[in-house]
Image (cartoon, rainbow, N blue to C red; front, top):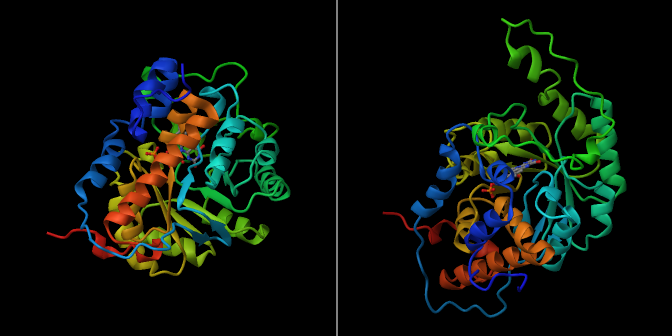
Length: 360
Ligand code: FNR
C-alpha cells in the first residue's frame, strides 16, 4: 500500500485514515478538547464563517511566501504547533515529525512533553526548531531545561501559559492512559510537585493541582534568563497581550490550545482582531486553532497574524505516513495558501491585508 492513501486530497482527509490506524483511546486523546468541546468546534466554524474577496488579474510575478520571524528566515508561515508524545502516533515519534517538517522547510515547535530527547530531535532538524516550555513546579529544573534547549540549538522558547489545569472529558471517558514505554522523557528527573495537602472536603484544584503553577513573575524571570526570543502561547485577550509585551515577550501566540483548556472560549481567529488592534504591531502575533486550509492561513494573516501553527493535522499525517505524512500535510497547506494568495491577488505575505476579507 502506498504511504499516502490515494484518496487524500486535503488535510482533513487524513483524519479518517488516522482514526482507523489508532487505538480508540489515543484517538480520543488527540481529537478531544475540554468539557463539551464547544471551542474545538468553534475554532473550525469561525473560519468557515469568514468570507473572502477575490481579486483578478493581479501581477503575481516574483510571488513568494517568505518571512522573517523572531530573527529567523522562514520560507512560509506554517509552523508545527507543539504537541505531546509523538511516539503515541508513530514508532519513530518526533524523529519522524522533524524530518517531515525539515523536508518542507517548516519551523517546528517541539513540545516539553515530547517523547524523545530534545537533543536527538535537534540533531535531525534542518529547519528552525523552537522549544515549548511548561513551567515545572521545580523551577531549577525548568531553567535547566531552557539551558538544554539553548545548548541544543533551539532558536526560541515558547512558554505555554494557558494550561495549568485542564478538563478532558472525552479522554477520560475513553480511559486514555499513556502506554508503557512512552513518556515525556525531557521532564525526567524533575522534582514532583508536593503531594496535595487538601483534606477530603478541601479544594483539590486550589490546594493540589495548582501547587507550583506559573505566574507572570515566572515569565519575567524566564525573560531575564534566556538570550533566546521568548514567545507566550495561550493569549486570548488584549489585556494579557499587553501584559506579555510589558514583561518582554518577543511574540505572542493567540491560541485557545485547540479547544483543550477552557471550553466555550471563542475561536482563536475571532479573538485575533481585537488583540491585533491592541498590540498595534509592537510584537508579531501568531495564531493556532482550527487551521485546516490554505484559506484559513490567509484569513489569519489578513486579520493580524504573521504566521500560524498547526496541531492535529500534523498528528494525523504522522499516524498515517510518518515523516512523509507530516511533509504531505505541510505541502498541502502551503500549496493551498499559494493558491489562495493568487486568487486574492496577494504576491507576498505583506500584501495580505484586511481587504481580502469580505464585509457585508
Ligand atoms: C496539544 N497542544 C499542546 N500545546 C502545548 O503548548 N504543549 C503541548 O504539549 C501540547 N500538546 C498537545 C497535544 C495534542 C494531542 C493536541 C491536539 C494539542 C496544543 C497545540 O499546540 C495547539 O495549540 C493546538 O493543537 C492547535 O489547534 P489545532 O491545530 O489542533 O486545531
